[in-house]
Length: 108
Image (cartoon, rainbow, N blue to C red; front, side, top):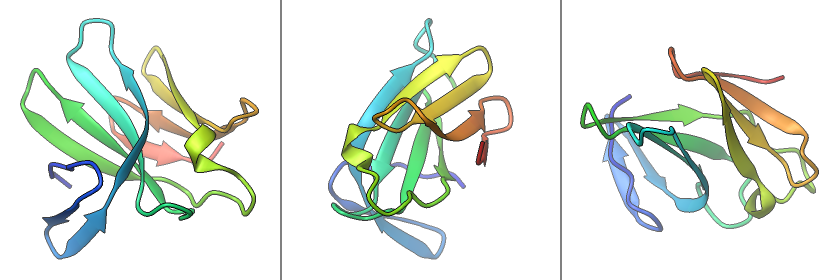
């Protein structure tokens, strides 16, 4: 899915509209890709990563597995390691992994 996401605003891509609030960000060393973790609404367990190809001027949204009740998405972080983007909870537990070549998310 290609789209542009504006923090704390709604955007439309295809037939879906999303409201989003940025939580965490990671950037490749050369700055060609920027990954931002968003939650759709404060208090929501629904999250996604916005993958911005700054060099290629395109963007993709990657839906993530739902957060478990009690986990605070606002304390989450993103970490890049090779071709994998890790979405981590506050305690360092990996919530999801994204293959940065295919932009597919998998639950660990």
